[in-house]
Image (cartoon, rainbow, N blue to C red; front, side):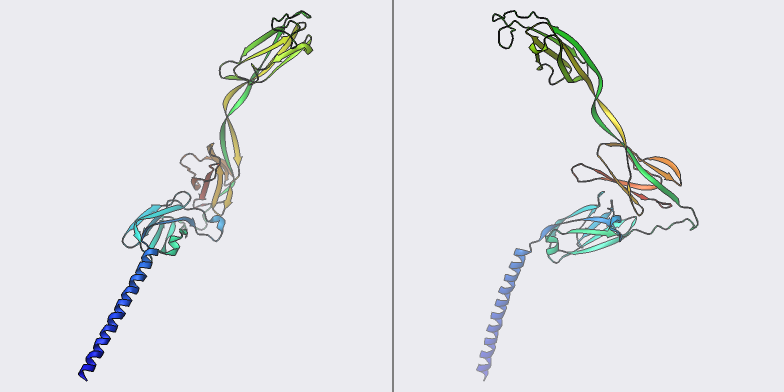
Length: 343
């Protein structure tokens, strides 16, 4: 009886040992697969911060939001740019299943947090959009206090460009003096067929410093014009100095040279546009060559001009500017009304 029990215990130990070996091998295989597919890696989180609003037209980008990403041990902070964009890169590896917290803070908006779990979502480079709720403006004014009204808003700006301006013209006549029916005898200049003696004449004009001739014309205006030839090689491309030449193989012919004088100059043109208003926000875009931006508006019925200036200062609104990624490099403006004003 004792021997039987001892053999049974030995068998049980062998079975337990075999199970442990198999379990260990299976665990090793599972860990190997996980490590192969889920290697720790540095993490980059990209997204944008916008204003929370039911009207999508009012979900404007929020700049200068402090975004802090933390995994409990390591933290990294960045600020959103003028377009609301942010990119947070962890300098250390993040394991699958590890939680990363994103905290958003701005003085004019309620703080918010987003919890991210490292795994398929982050590996797929998902883009995150954080919609922050504005802090309700607690007005210290009495309800009966007057609110200033801003109406008839118009944007005025100037665009400078280099243009060629017509500053004058030039006129000159000259003659190719010749006798008709005189054999050439092989001594050029001759008529195109080489039979008759010809005479060539030319005239040169100088447009002066910083000037250029354009639209140059040369024509025969008197004499046997059918028996003349004009050489345009000296003026076809214009320029400061031009030379016009002509040949007559009959009697004396008279030629008229005309040209327009142009000068390159910087031209400034004033332009206007009407901005778009969504709620308390005003939006407009300008070309990159714009200068001297001002807003014309009626403040409580009184027409006024408000130069925006490099500091983007307005007494009745807070403005921001950013560059659009479009090929034209458009400049995007946004102005939000200050408390005490309404459109």
